[in-house]
Length: 462
Image (tube, rainbow, N blue to C red; front, side, top):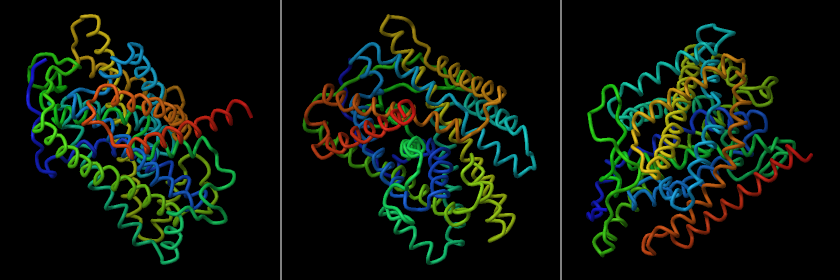
């Protein structure tokens, strides 16, 4: 271990980036499909839960980020020090939770409607997956490609959705939205009668990234060079990236606990909280609410909204009638692109998780680690698995997304507990979370424990 100073924090505007990636991971599941699906079927009385869900994930993500800022390594390295079996849990749970190509299947349905492809839309999904896989493989710096890709998707799609929603909304609709934000629905308070708990928990878990994807924030901020991550290596393309020594997973640099370094950390902490609040929390909550609002105004109460993702194509038909057919086409293309960006972002993030945890175990056994090569191999295995699943006929997007989300809700419960105890064990008192932040984390643990228990009981014991 080398001793180096805790870097000084740059201005806030230069820190923008990692949170765009994380919110991009939630666009295709919670924002586009699950919360609008619930609003189309049950009205706006459930949108309070979308805001609460993304608020939960804000505090969750910041505790993950806290560790990486101080240690200059991912939380997975710390988890391995807690118990050598944990890397295997993250490898298996990431694959089971996110290997299903639900978002790309949904993306193909929307894009297929634009071009009049009624059946076999999974071939479109396969083509798009391969093309984006090539994009990531040829980009010199993996982090830069992912950040730029997700940032432009969000900067284009969110204003577009907002403009459509505002043009359609009437005063009575805004009143219904205001009531929904405080849990008042049409004939119910907070949770409507008859709602499937598995779908509700899935939407809550995907109000943001969800599952093990939240943990990838520690890897993204390391790649961005936040805090002690300034001294860490980065994953580069094996084709076009700069030649560099293979990077390991654990940090090789630490800092002394002195007044100057503590001061620098506090400045970092204040600014990364502001960055995550603006990009992840505000953008995520706003996007989910707007898309739910749009679904409510266009298709709530219509027949056909309870099956799969058909409500989205119904939305496009109503938008064509209320505004213009060209706007409907753009809506489908934007929605399809958001779903695709989420799918490839999920595969990229899970490939990071799996490659990192394999590397951690190899390093523990004194074996050479080729992290970049391992990552790209895993990424293409994810793409290949998605192709096989779609060719085998498992093409119903919502079912695939709900299946993965229930698994990921339990995975979130596990990593919430692990991250809490990791920070208590590994971080000095001066860097640990305050009591009120600890209280929020325990509230989240209790919430996910109760709802996961309800879903398990509903599925297996009733």
